[in-house]
Length: 454
Ligand SMILES: NCCC[C@H](NC(=O)CCC(=O)O)C(=O)O
Image 1 (cartoon, protein in one colour):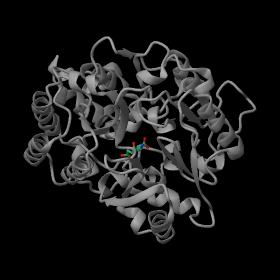
Image 2: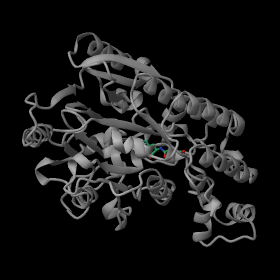
Image 3: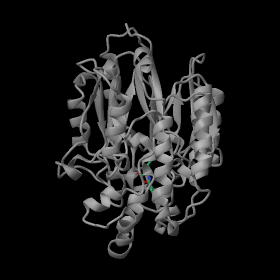
Image 4: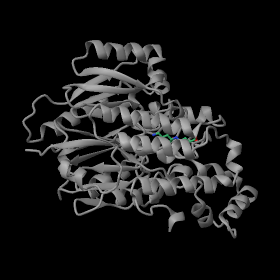
């Protein structure tokens, strides 16, 4: 029997340098919106509002801090020197201006890419395992893993947790974290099936691959994580993304499929071999010795109802599926873009009205994040935790009314209303952003997690 456990949503707080730089080739929104003027303040407040609403639904909601940006240590590591950090930035502008946007990116807000987490109920040693994603496919994201590691270690302390290093091995082990990982279980504290979706097998020359855009997750990375987390092979399932979907803008599996407990909602074109995926998942699910006979519920969204382009533009599958206390079924947390896309809003209406598993759909304005290809699910990292584990967290990261108002005041005080690509040339952003983050580490009781604090 499982003890009571919660699925805690840790959401990334949007950092003070949120901007649109068009950095992610193959991410349709990022490609399209590069160069727009962003509002870091709106972005952070929009994210926080979603967190507040979820915590008011009775769910456990926590927050992860943004990373230090601009990241001057990366520039120094790349051989750019200067007597002061401002001078390093000026020297970058003259010698390697192409680095600027990457070291300013607030992309660490999308914590679904921060790490893969296997909770204690799935692992042979009974501990919760974390592997921070190496994010090696994109320069601006590859610089996240070190800070992610530090942050996770500062929050999840003690014997119950194992923190692995980000995977070595470069592109062959390219890993984008929980965005390509889902777990299925009757109750959160039960042993679950862990489902890994990859874009390519990098050691197999015959592996099918997309032709236009990069496949960001490799099978070899997923398999290594399963191995080092000590997962039961019978309850571990792998599936390859449909390469055509990647070419249609599905750069992570969480753009085309989403799961919660024993439910998987996915698009007809998500996987290379859908029948096998369903069969393997059910086989793994039934290999559990838990008294739940209902199996995995599949909601397959057909192309006829929602063309893949509408799914990609609206982020229908980047919704969060949650089960608030007091509800038996699933609540869908969707971005407003879903409401504004006819096929998708009709489909969601049908789910809400007629599907026995879906209780309600709640919409949120997350436009600032969505314009860079990050929906509700991209903004959260799910960690199943026992009540004892939750109680033992020392950091002040669980959202309640007090923390919400402190964070709102902190954002109002430190964040700019607007940030344009050209503003990144302004070295005063270094100090501005460090002052904000320094105050945040005190507010969240995280200790010194940033390079500038060491
Ligand atoms: N899970 C959602 C991730 C979105 C993220 N976008 C970005 O990095 C865009 C940044 C920019 O273009 O400014 C990505 O593609 O990895």
